[in-house]
Length: 177
Ligand SMILES: [Fe+2]
Ligand SMILES: [Fe+2]
Image (cartoon, rainbow, N blue to C red):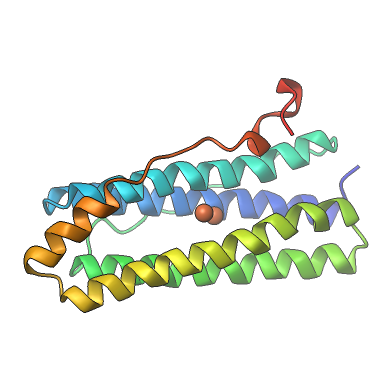
């Protein structure tokens, strides 16, 4: 069984992670419309990663016999003042998500729910990586100043990112880890 409070909070986190996917998908479209296909590709990969985050919470609830109550996803912005502004918004959003993960960790400790505590440790580590990536993107764009050959090179480099589906997110019935 999954404790009631944990189930409710995880259901909310599924919404936050799905909103993250929605936000980054919107950023991908806007960046591509600005001619920055590589940065758009980076955000497309990030979108897929966020969906796997939502699925980790989803699978955890179902594996423990909990019930699912999917919530409404807010509409993300459709445009930003500059690529730098978009990546700054992404960093700000990841900091918000880190706060949510920390709240969930506190709750799992308060509820003595060790199963969710173990699962949340993965997210604590993941958020370190997410903030690091988001910070680097902001720094790189800041250095370039949003113009010229540097922008072209950064766009090409970011376009190399590919998505690898993590085994750990496979559904319980598929025998994944
Ligand atoms: Fe996430
Ligand atoms: Fe990540």
